[in-house]
Length: 151
Image 1 (cartoon, rainbow, N blue to C red):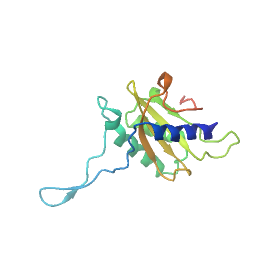
Image 2: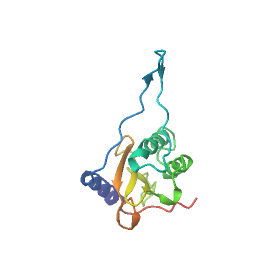
Image 3: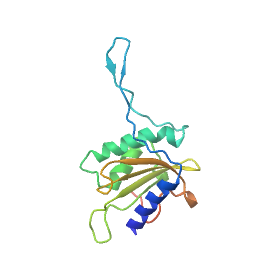
């Protein structure tokens, strides 16, 4: 079932006019010639999903760099701490039905009436992948089985 959800996410990513966020904040020289880092991304509640993709990606990369990289709850908690709405989130299970770690973990935040911020991590991707994708029927962002966010 999870493999089907992963395949569907990949298929949707290929069909949707989504934008993948691969850029990182860059440093810029100041008037004195010293290099100052770009400001950290912040939540833009009135912005678009694309406007909020840098923060979504930064949170995902932050969790990915920890020992909790394979725990869906860590991504949800990080996104909530950054200001995203828990009620608008979905996350796939951390383990397969036989108790093995999943090859791919997906998490999402529904944004507005039409968009979703979607992230995917795990051994199958090797890195954080984030995209803005269109919402599915019923306001869902992920295909297949998701787990309750009840903590």
